[in-house]
Every structure is written in structure tokens, then in C-alpha cells.
Length: 139
Image 1: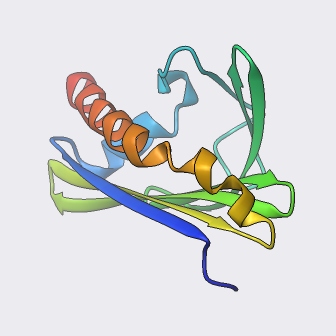
Image 2: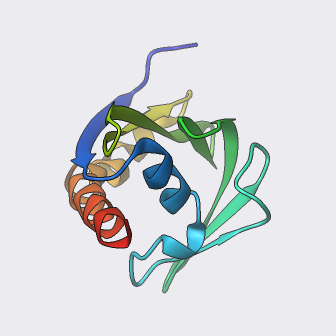
């Protein structure tokens, strides 16, 4: 595997167990990020297709790997590049957890997407902080 053209990692802590946070996150109905909408082709498992729809574009991804209750990798195939989202759910204590998201852009054409993926360096921290608060409210 070649080294990524770009990568970014962010984590948040949350007042909920790892299991509760995982169950909340893997229910795509909880993915609230207007104006984007999300649709999963079936259960949250490897091979399921994820469609993200925005007013002016639609993105297609695939859940490539799932380690139940611990981690998942979602990959978006681009033209000669892949943008991957690796989520990890870690137990800190019985009622506190850490959620980590690692993003990577790889592939021979990855450099052409650098300007587009840089936006994640601002949006991921905001989105993950919001996710942690929503999990805590639902707990």
C-alpha cells in the first residue's frame, strides 16, 4: 500500500459507553448533517453501499470493513483514487468512550483531489463534536 497523498485524524470523547456510541452511529437514520441525506443499502455491514446526497451532487461509498462494536472503514471510490473514512470506537471507562476518525486519500490520481478533501480538516472536528453531543443526549 502506498503512503497517502493526504490524511487527517480527529477524536472526541463522549459520555456514553463504546457500545452505545457504536449502536447510535451505525444507525444511519441518526446521521443528521443537512443539507446532506444518507441512505444505506441494507444493514451496517461490509459490502453495504452508502449514498450521500447533497443539493448539487451524489456520492457513493461502500462499507469495506466492520469490526462489530469497534471499528468500520467506509471507502469512496474516486477516479483513480480512494477516500477512506476509518472510524474507531474505544472504551475509556464503562460509561465513557473515545471516537476516532481517520481519513486517507490514496491512489495514483489522489493529488488532483487535495483541494477538495482539505475541507474535511474543518468539517470533521465540527461534525464529530456534534455527534458526541447527540450520542450523549440519546444516552
